[in-house]
Length: 95
Length: 483
Image (tube, rainbow over all chains, first blue to last red; front, side, top):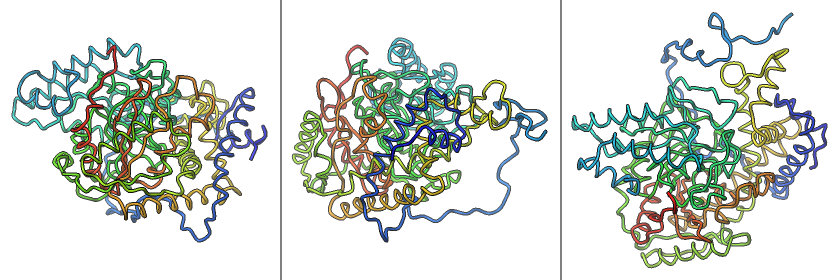
């Protein structure tokens, strides 16, 4: 299916991606080509076929509910763009 | 020293012919000399490498060396390394220094291997040519006007030019096997779950798998011995015994049943690639194998299915790259949404953005059944093809790629043409099977890769089958001129 410029804006918003206006036509074309490729799937009869989410038929492993990790907050936060008193700083959310 | 295999380097270190420090300095010098042209490394960690090499020599002196102790290697820049930048070839993670080691990095480190640095790759492993890297494309050592393949292109090129004796890679749709084929080296993608994904930056979590890239199947076996095994920190890690892959190399392949899928030898296959693969088939016949024609009827659906499953998973995995806790943040965000959108818009390159958007679209309300659910059902059909085939044969053989290395820039602006370059490798990831590529000849002076696909957890047999071919042929011994 061919995507319009409007569709590109909508999808980019869903994915929280800023896209330059001048790049929108190229994205519309490339994404439409990708969706046309994917469209080949629709010709296949998949009635009754169990969807496969994972390559190995395995059950999610569970572990005892015990503390296994130490607190390493400072170590992990040293590469954050902005922190203060152990908190990540972002622009004001509530006026 | 750089023309030796890992097995030969291991023997040389054990015999005291050279030390790990000498070996490491030799490879670091080669990187300085040649990598300006190839661009196969993003980061060279010279100081740490020499420190690790000194420690390896001390360990050897104390009589505690293993087969890999003191041998240098390069890690794909997708593996987190404590203290050394992990960029995933993205502007988004350009400043990122991981606070911990990936399990693969830790295990190879415990084996005593020396990390030379981090190799270039397609951004977030999304690409088949290494042209989507924020740090520029990698050149193919066999022809510097051609691509090395991707996404583990830097790992493949560095091993092919012997700037490193071995490297790690990851394979989501062919990212170990395709660059191994295009650069004339040997690479193995293990069964999903065989090698831990902990600390390996996620692209598509149900497909991603790490594996070794080296000069030979024997070298891959030595590396896999150290890499494979259960890891409680990876929720999909397989709880299974790890066989000694090196010990299994010598097995006789008389009577081995090799399946030749007719769909892998049809339209679109370059005649010179076909001829090289045919010659390998003849060689296997001489070694006593039995050739069986098989069919994998849903092969043509693998690329379309993958380009729903992989983007859907990537759009979810990459949502953590939001400019808040680590990585790139845009200048002067006016509110939180602006911070998310511009950090991501400026931090990701075009191919990553395309895949995130395809994924977001496929998962969006009203389209889920038509795309994501449908793709999961077809994934089941593709897997069943292999399960049926493995009732008749022991391994499956075919070309790794339809053509040898293509020219830099040739497919850069046509994503669909690029995606189709992975037509023979992608189904293996969808099914979760192990697969490998090994050199089997040349097409216009460019290497051709032979693909072997095994049944679940049958890496030992794959490596054995590849090793027997490499004992009888010398394609894996050819080196590019000028390095």
